[in-house]
Image (cartoon, rainbow, N blue to C red; front, side, top):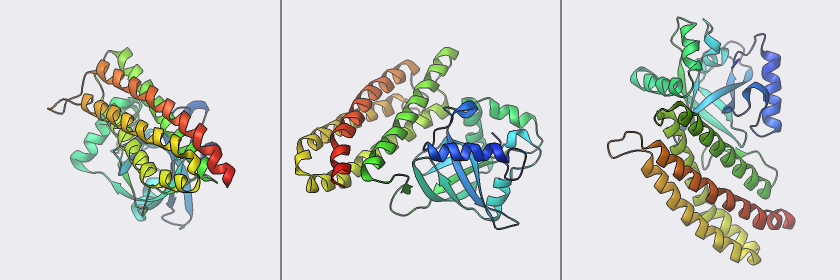
Length: 293
């Protein structure tokens, strides 16, 4: 992925940035289906803010990982040199925009993250072969207080839809990655396990927020939604049970990868339940919320 600030790919990067923002994280062409974010850093020499599209790896609920590959260039990308000078960055996920602290991984932690990346996509290893520098891996920690960041939506109903669509996209990526693993006849990869667990944690956090904040807010202002909210709460409990079962199948007691076929079965069960749940919530709540507004 081109990731320099002032290189021949600048116009290409800007096209990706514009498409990413217009479609809340979706891009087409070569990067269709890829996990991308927009990373804004402060220029080490100029102090000017620069935004760059970069690929990322899920890494649990507190951080994501980005890799300063520069396509195997002998030079570190500008965004990496910028964050070395100022680790305070801004991240756009397509749904949320948040402030983050960049931390360059070192030693065994870096090596484990790199191994996961290479296992998930051998292209990273190809980049490393092209350069003598050790390609850095950087963790981006969300530092926004009180939530995941500013949501890129103009209404509460739209916010529900864009968050739901983000879950749909991530689940589709996970299912595609599992299909590739199945076709290769391999075991469940370490990064794929992390992707699943990160998704599970994000879904748990989202449903907890709805139960504690969104649903009481809507029920108070729109009493006619009580039956729908009661059903949605019950579905949250059912989905939580499916999520817990998926977590159990992702690892044995010894921490090794679970059986891929069993994991796939649990992912499909969760997919069916979640898609029906999201569709019902959008159908029942969004018209009421945005119509009243």
